[in-house]
Length: 295
Image 1: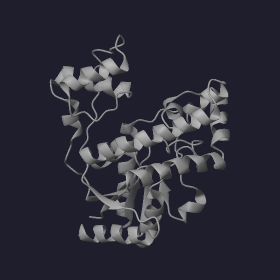
Image 2: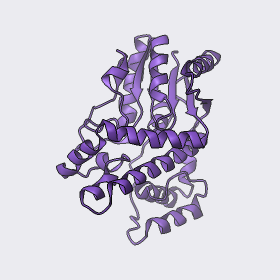
Image 3: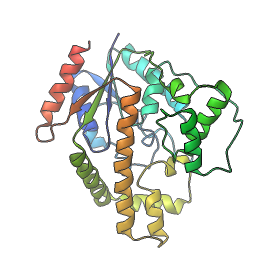
Image 4: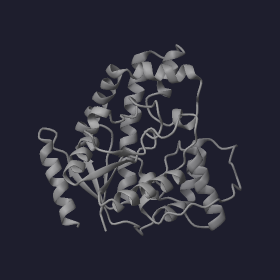
């Protein structure tokens, strides 16, 4: 069976560059695994690949929804498995690329979704109080304290099943032959690249893209989830300076990168590669060696 190649890592690390190189060498097609790049019109802040960058490689699950539409991890599970099966059937190599770990896990692992009753919405608790409550029943949780919806889901899961939600998430049964490649670098270099990436987004038109979304009045999950849009709303409303908003985007992006590393290390068998930014061909060669070794 064809191997599914998964490329993960934080923004600005080189995932796109590696995915295109591997697709060209391995007769591959690329599957987006970033929850924010599903949506049309969210391009600059999500670091969505451009037509020029695609290099004639087929990409799947990009720009498939508008920002008013809801799209869940369950929807992604169905769509991504259909795409993977189609690529394999055509004797090509599926290459998943992105930083949304739950999307990747739901796609490749025996990860089942249930319609479970919400027995408590915990309206009277702050995010911090909710998170502390979760830690008492699930000290190994990787859910971020500000992800209120998932914290509540985890608490309700414990109330129903009397076992931690993190145990449910640690599903080890892979449904596909897959290799997980993670791109990394030292923290100082990573943070410098993230800061630079935000500056580049501004020169590419992030402010204009965010203003267009702001003026649309749409505040769906698609708009609120990505880092880079809602942070600028305070600037448009004269509540903060542009410099303050930009610094907040950089700070949130750095914090998000840290959480991504924690999640992937806890949830998947990642083969980490230290990226050679001076000679990226070395990174490509290392990835190819890992793939060959795991065939």
